[in-house]
Image (tube, one colour):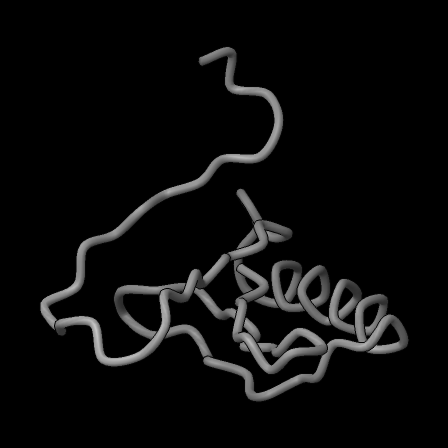
Length: 83
């Protein structure tokens, strides 16, 4: 309520449940940044997380609707995005 700390957003999807429950987190590192400045912030956080066991999956480049983000996996293979 105060706007401080982590924020979680639960999004409904049209697909039914087919496997165990999963949570996909977007880790906000580029809030308010655009273009090369945003990409640099994402890359810096990616570089920090890889030695801790995260795996970089792919870069989703900016398009007409969305800014860039980096898809990663934690040590158990669960995906999360640096956004």
